[in-house]
Length: 392
Image (tube, rainbow, N blue to C red; front, side, top):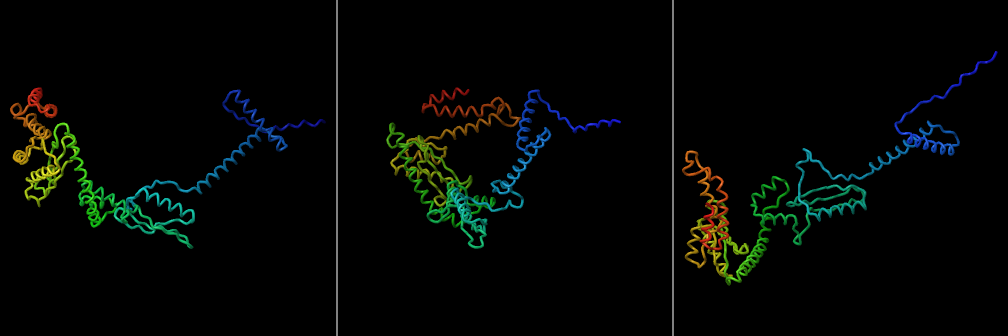
């Protein structure tokens, strides 16, 4: 009896479908064939498509794992270069100070030099305030030879003073800020404070330099103002004066300043206090007298004196000098603007009697027209009247 034929077992198979053109399919099969041939020659055994794909996947995963390990090791060994620091509730009251650029560069150089000779970490041991500057001690944790050095956030001046504190003193004096305002500001911000003794000492030495620079500037300004009239008059200048009181009522001091009409530079600045006269209303007159005396000493006579219509100054110029008395344009226009406002606005029951709504848009243009009419009339009263008539 014949033996029945055995059923041939087929190797299990599966299909993978990819979207693509026929050209892309041929290209992929060609690459698979190249890899299969290379592996067959190298391993001296046959490779199917599945074995080729498995080999490619294993090779990829191996390389990717090595890359991740190298990146992780690099991250672990990398120095933290982040400079962003977030403020939290627990450190909002940390010490704040001022630092000069050169001092900041110096601490960076010192840390770099220390890192070359020592692997230990530097710690900040102490921090002492010197005005707006800090002095800090740095020390490393080396058990054999601990390194330490002192650092300040400001360079030193030749007189051993701090540059940062001197710059702050300079700004405090030249800005006109009152000592009480400075004290409240620095106490509130917590940036340190220069002691009153240090500020007074700096002011006494700085005052002499300011006075010298002021005198040189005024002397130069007087000569420049005289030279501006060289083709018209010899040694005669036109000035504008005004007084600045310490406050509105019963001021303890007053500064009277004279500006040159051509250069607009300060020709004289006189400071009057209650030691000179206890009556504040007479301070401007005293300052004006001193300005006249000062210009006379510098061989400069006054041709036209413009001021803000102070009656005492009007009387002084009329009785004690040959200067032409003149009120300045700004104060003239200011008075006109105030008078016009009364005609453009008022209570409802007086509308049409003392003021009119139709004049509401004239409060600004009319003073502007008057200002430029005065500026461009060249001293001709007829031309000024004709220009003012154009307002109507």
